[in-house]
Image (cartoon, rainbow, N blue to C red):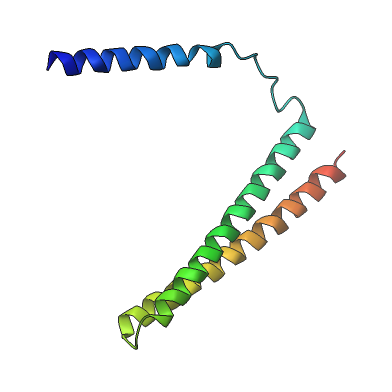
Length: 113
């Protein structure tokens, strides 16, 4: 018991020594300093959401197609596959709407300048 406790303390001490270079990093400048920075930050967030939704949609399409093909005629598996394909379509629609809304908001904000 004492050996285990001592070895855990030694390992934690070594890990704490490894964290010192991280603490020596310079202070970063703020990303958002003006209104243009807010616009850019929002556009980046929408692009990330768009990409994530499309990746999830592709995964759901693959999972739904696999479930549908491997259902062997069982109604519960067929329903599960169709539901996954439906969720994939919903994810694609949300991704497309997010880019459309982002474009509308960007045009609205830029026209105010």
